[in-house]
Length: 162
Image (tube, rainbow, N blue to C red):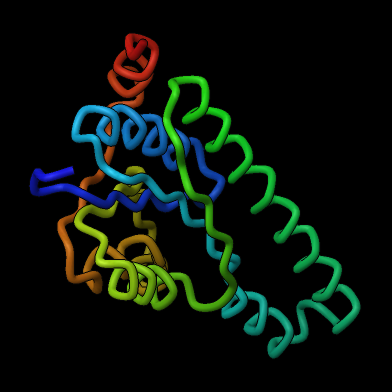
């Protein structure tokens, strides 16, 4: 671990793009001999907005949050399995809060060298652009960012890793 990339953080949000990013991060981590961490952030800010606008009542909000917490665990377990299949140790971290703020804080507190994210979703409106948490994180972190866009290539690289 004496190259420019010693610690890699992959942000997992449950999308296919984030799983592709995780596979690519596994490949990159093995190649660079870097520590790998997967981070899932349950977006409680969005949940609070749903409660404030009365889309959810409190009981529905609590149930929805439990579902999100369970989803986080499933996706982190899946990413852990992807890493282990390739003989790689991985740390998984589950947080709750404002996604971009939690990512930025984790990067700063853990001296992360590279943030790996999946391809950003297509922007349909200015509001979508403003609330895209992965994009906000990408702009806010004080480290290099790698966006994984080629799903086919990501699978090929991962499958070829022995």
